[in-house]
Length: 249
Image 1 (cartoon, rainbow, N blue to C red):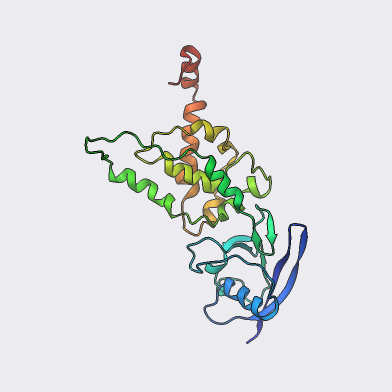
Image 2: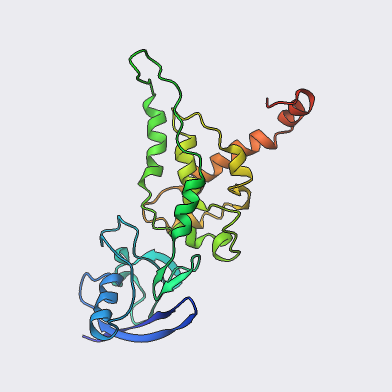
């Protein structure tokens, strides 16, 4: 069986280069299988992060032929036959070694988002009454596996490096799950406008396209949050009300 050529980025924070490899591909193999095989055959010291190999841990995120993808969920048969497969680390985060990036910034961002704050119980027995439709609305957002592919493809982080001003699509989804929860009463709109930088998102939907869990990030999470921010801070009637009475409408 002919070997498939690979170009894999090797290096660390100080720099690196693409190196050429080749390995035999058998039926059913995914890109992560090929990387492991290359490790075993000719690159024992190559660093790659992975865990479940089932598309549920989000660990093996990388860029395959220029597109952010999970290596464990990208079948070799889905790639153009006969062409070199190029694998490199995510561009939106600092490189640690080879295909492994430092994604710790994401966990710091999550800590800055105001946590869930439930309203008082509806009944004397300490329980709440919730419509099933309201519960269903936020379930989609809970499918996120934090692979950070949406963060990687977002041009605000990937190209403009505004990590100190923009929390990225993954955490706009997380915020939406809190904001749209039927019991939550916390106010995060001012944070979304200023500290979290939702205005930087120009809804290209690239984050939705790369999501392995098929979360409708742009339409179901980001746009509704943008509408809430616009209603609060940019609606002319509300602005007039605040000017006249010094408080929100």
